[in-house]
Image (cartoon, rainbow, N blue to C red):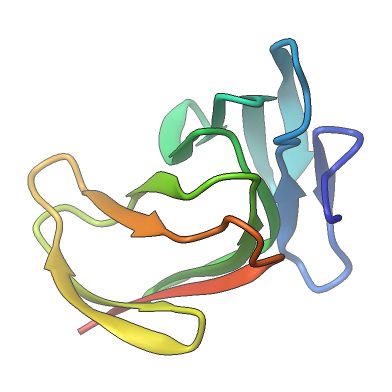
Length: 137
């Protein structure tokens, strides 16, 4: 299991790992420094949320554990794990089209609106970790 016991941590490759989908009670950590930015994480069984410099970056319902989240100019990629299938919302660029890959296969193209949010569903039950990649088209 790949939960992040300390709620959030910096990885050697410059990515960030966060969330603990096994917690029965809400836990949060604010002002975590990583790569010149400040992160805030809230996590437990029913929800995981990540903010970067006060801006929305990631949310899942129910809660998930996320490993090696990397942001690029074209999008982001990460590995996600949870006890149940999850609805994930990502904070990306406004009014931009992205291709979304889950488990190595494309699930199609999606466009963000004015708020830059993109929502997708990921099957996690009994799957272990699942790779997610979102790339600007």
